[in-house]
Image (cartoon, rainbow over all chains, first blue to last red; front, top):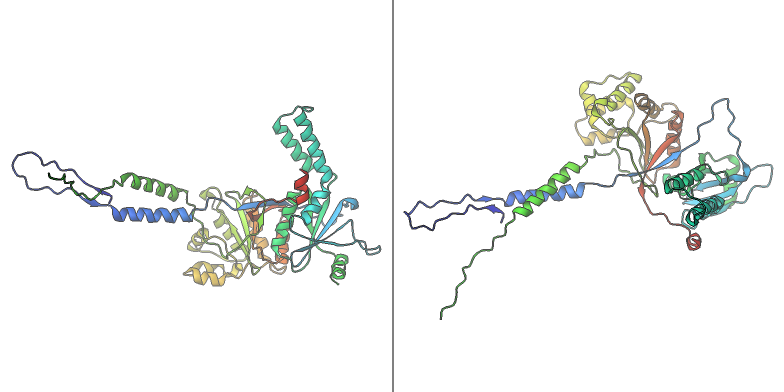
Length: 209
Length: 212
């Protein structure tokens, strides 16, 4: 095993010397221990830090301030209900008029994600056009400019949906994270978490019947 | 004819390079290992496609466990000289008329997340072992009558206005609790915060993938 052996030269024909023992250090236990510690630290080290998802909510309106008016044509309401289901409708629900029709969907890739991407089509087309212009050489800008311009387009978008996320009782935190993640995937710039209103509660109730 | 006799020797392998390598790796792993204090409750975070890593320091983490208990954690700042935890503890203590001994403050600095009413903090910090401490973690009160989470968040922001806030909730936590926590943050004018998640892959709807 691992050990230090001191070579002894005793070839000569000289006098018989008292036999010298080579210094023999048995390193096996030390190596064992080093190996053990190494394994321990390798297994306990976590290299990847947990990830975070940033969420920016609109400021709460002050006491004597009216909440900002919402563009009805752009509003998309997402109602989260239990058992990981999503109901959505367009515009605003007015109790004095016929109530909008709820559509049921879920968190799979062909579920709400498709709806949101569809809504953001105009924006995607705009970004695609910009990219195409750059590739074809019509527009001469650097890659950094293109990137920042695209980012700004996503941020200052005026055509995409304004999503109101409303969670009913029995919704888990997981669903909230999932829906906010959907917003990030579909590049929806404007969304907020709001309380579910009584009209919508009855709508959900009617839907379940 | 005599055969050539080979001297029978036990093979000796020189292990010195291997041992060298072992120690090198060992030193590397010891130095890179980050000591992670134990969390107050096991939390299974949901997944998202976000790739941003959590900031290193000045983070207030609000943990929400599976059974809807709320825990609070704040780091000590980028430099230990900031003594953030000690300052926040004393400020919250004075709010609830609690005096902490230097020993209790020292203990608090070394701990990670905690979740209990402020009145129980001295007893919690004097507790002899982890087991008895665990029993006292009943969650921070966030009712409208006694909203102590509000106090913690307010003082955390008072000592450092650049504090980042992160909500680390269990996927199975109920939304009403999360809503209350978000309301506390918004009442403190924190409108930008983070949700701690695990990483997962983005999948696009089938027809959109085909069109591209």
